[in-house]
Image (spheres, rainbow, N blue to C red):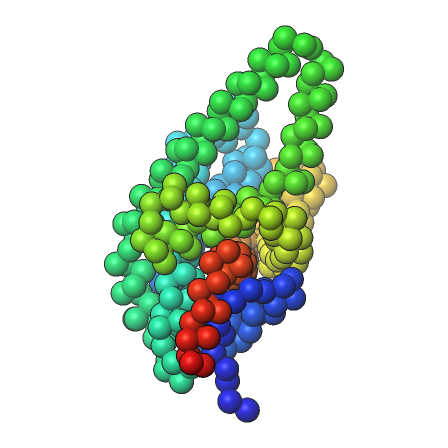
Length: 315
């Protein structure tokens, strides 16, 4: 049976957005994940090793029973945190670049033409500066907005007391339930527009917000289902490392002797933390795809360019 190319500019319902995202992965499984492995993989590997090293170093320090508990948080620990944060940011930027550039190349080619890792890599590195700048601007803007909101919340609580604190906490929980899934769509969709249309991050966010009008709850439902499903998968991926870490902790607590953790446990933690993090990023690419397909559905609903091009082809 001949493969059919997925039409991007198309209005989609709930099932079509999720179904076409999975269909896209099925059609491009080898080259898509090969691009993630070879382009993003080295940085995920470094981040995973740094995170595992940070965890094992902290465990080893705790087992040595330092006289000052704050000795755990030494320069090496903070250096590991800095390395993990840096490579986490870089990995997320590259992951967005790989997913969205791959989609653009897919739309440009016929269904029979192969997409190579080197081809994706060239596209990613050609606009990595634009994505990095957009990410930095977005992060600083987000920090500024969150700081202002936190100061407003603290001032509100300090003026009105404990009752105000409870109200703020309830509003925060309610706000997270309502807006967090949509925010998880909004940010990747904005970066998709940055890559596709070569727009600034603010103009891209404005476009996503414009097309989101009238589709808020639909997007909330799609992203809630997607995030819960992918979250369960990611928990399973990281379960082995969590089990080994818990076993090491409980065995140390139950031991009456000051026994250092087994070196083999440290190696296993290193392997499973890195593997779990790598698989987590691979599954995160699915949420990027879902966000892009959802945005293009909103865009088609407002502009109808895909329908017009199909009418022109018939004529």
